[in-house]
Each structure stands twice: as structure tokens, then as C-alpha cells.
Image (cartoon, rainbow over all chains, first blue to last red; front, side, top):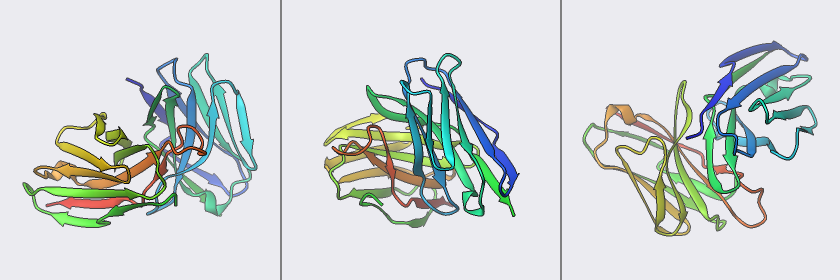
Length: 112
Length: 115
């Protein structure tokens, strides 16, 4: 089955700086790569996703980049704000299968 | 919140007792999932359903069973709860026409403690 590794497990950055979280996966057939944000005590919610025919996608301060050859993708958050503090999960899936395999999560802390 | 609820939201039970968690959705999503969330493990799939009475195992299915007799309800049963099943359980849904393909919407979670 698919194996997803996510790094780092914890990340602290100064407010206003950028944060980068990376995930690698094992199945070259995978073609859907979402990122979920989970605030303390809340449910995970999708913040951005990318499909294998696109190398980069941006939505305001967040962006995701995909390198299919190397089988890794990254979440970039610029100009971080206190409300960005949360746990972030990457996931991997494919169009022929509605299942997602999740990474183990990154706890991001923004230092005021 | 995509019209998905879970019940109960919190439960404390004893080892060896049966437990059933319920997931209910109101927006006609085809697919439903049960995950457990534990520190250091992220979200792990227990079972999922791709239609009424159609279910399949995930990566951590041992000790769990599921049933889906109606589109809107997906039940997770622990036949004989063990302390290792203490966790936060999330239900998720996907596959409604008009939503982003593969996007999963999560319920609020159920915190289960097995003493």
C-alpha cells in the first residue's frame, strides 16, 4: 500500500516568516495531494490540494508544490500569522480509488 | 460543516464492553470513512464504505466492524473494547456531485476512552 512520510513533526517560526512542510510518498500512480489543517480540538479541514498534472498551486498565503519524479510535495505558508498555528496533514490519493493515505502530521507554532 | 455529525461526542467505557459510534450525513455523499487519530500516527483508516451495504477494510481494521444500511448512516462497532482502542474517531464523507473529486469532509470527532 501507499506509504506517506511527513517532516518535520514540529515546527516553530516567528510571526511573519515562512513555513515549509514536506511529504514523500511511495506509489507513483498517486495523483491527488491534499493538505488539511486541524486546529486544537477541531476537525481536519482541507486548505489546498493539487493534482498530478499541475506542478504548483497557490491560494493567497499558502502554496503547494509537487515533484512527481521525486515523489514529494510541499506546503508553503508565507507571512505567517498566529492563526496559522495548528496541525497540518498531507495526504495522498488517486482518482481510481476514493481512499486517502495521511501523513503523521506537523504541529506548526507561530511565535508572536 | 458539510452536514456531517457524529454521536456520541464523548464516551467512557470499560474493557470488554461493546461500543457503537454513529456517523450521520445529510448531503448524499457516496463514500463514508472511519478514521482513528492517535499522537504520532496521524489519521489512520479503519473501514470505509462506497455505497449502501458496500464496505471494505482500511489499514487498522482489526477489532472493528462497520455497517451501512442507509446512505446517510455509517456505524462503527467495537465488539469488545480494549484499552488500545482509546482514541479520537473521525468520520469523513466524500463523493457528492459538485464537490472537488476526492475531497473528504470530516465530522466533529468522538473521543472514546476505554478503561
